[in-house]
View (cartoon, rainbow, N blue to C red):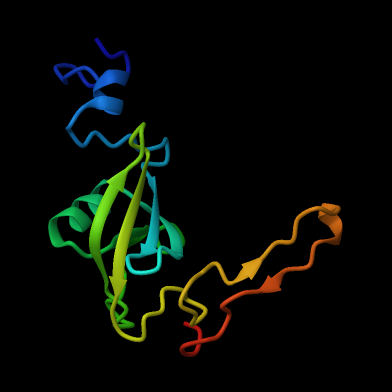
Length: 149
């Protein structure tokens, strides 16, 4: 029996069930969130990393469009609702211990995914091989598609 589970609830899934089974058994963190990685279905480029709570995951699975939990607003966020940059899922996967999802997607509107107006949130490279204190970020694919939100 699960010590932290409400009385009468089923026991938590076993490691084997979570890692090898065919059931979606997401393992949300203490904050109620899992990591969500969004990539471009055509290029494989990472567009953004966000978080989902149980409701955002359910809405994403049921609608085929990305929904996230906005930690700053404390609310569900349907990506593209206001910008037109709807993220339509082509394929969605969950990692081995079911605490992160990876979505391959197409992006509507101008194709951007970053609030800064860029296609990707990962528009700066970090040079390696020197002292951390000396690092200066290098722009990569940093062109803006529109003004920042």
